[in-house]
Image 1 (cartoon, rainbow, N blue to C red):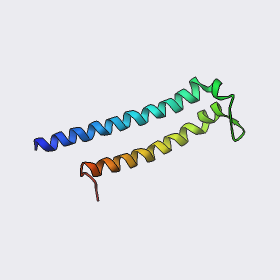
Image 2: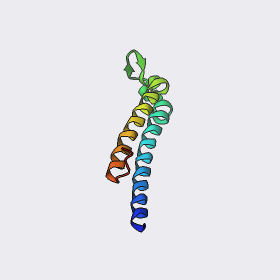
Image 3: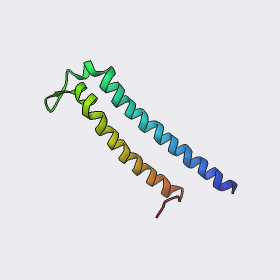
Length: 87
């Protein structure tokens, strides 16, 4: 039982590490690129739109969806590592 608790603690530490990294990336893209760095990014264009505007309106949503897919991949891999997969 003690061994199981240690494994679950390690599992959750890994999970929280993944969450922290992915949420930090999302924060940087949505707040950093969409608000703080918008003026600098607006000097560049993406498909005819200013890059800062694009990140504020579309880019942060795309990045968020990609981060969800990355999280699912990482969690499936972590579940297999700790033999907690649902298969």
